[in-house]
Image 1: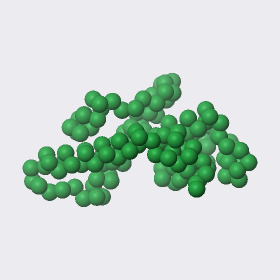
Image 2 (image 1 turned 90 degrees about the vertical axis):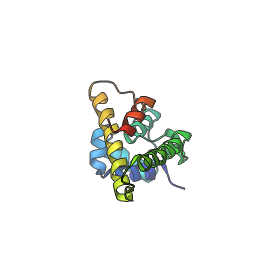
Image 3 (image 1 turned 30 degrees about the horizontal axis):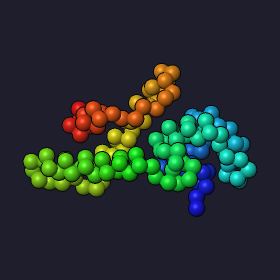
Length: 141
């Protein structure tokens, strides 16, 4: 079973960040990160919330490794998104898995950028995407 630190480490690697950059962005001392790694301490509740928002993961997953219903729905929504694209494509050529991955990463990057902009503007509350945003993403606007 993975520890909280191992899940954080996984998220850092997945984002392509260094641990130092992660610590700087979330105002965590490298000493604290080292304590988390050695199991001497764990992040505070507030810090866990901040980390979960930063990486757009649920607290359930970050703390105990369990996917939330929202994450499962998000995965199904992505499958639906690509099925709609296939149906709309008049030339009947499907997107490759590499192209699908690129689109998914771009959508995730856009959501992160929106979060970062709202954070820089002083609004630290993460805003999940709405139905209208989902529709506009599917329509390509």
